[in-house]
Image 1 (cartoon, rainbow, N blue to C red):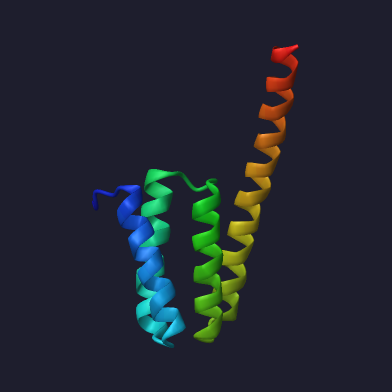
Image 2 (tube, rainbow, N blue to C red):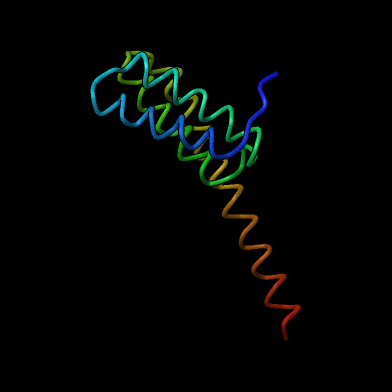
Length: 100
């Protein structure tokens, strides 16, 4: 098992973006997968940063011709953002009720 911290995951994500911009799709995928794994382990699957990295991975996988996998990843990212937004609304409503 890999020991993760958010900084390593963020660095892998940044390097993945750099590889993507250079057209190095295989390296971009490898680094972005590491970023997603690290973010899921440290921040959780329903964190905004995890969802953004997952959506970036979907873009890379689509570019590499794996459209079904890209759709699955993109749906996973959207669902995480939906749950995050729903949770934020509940927390906000609860916070507003307790402040009064």
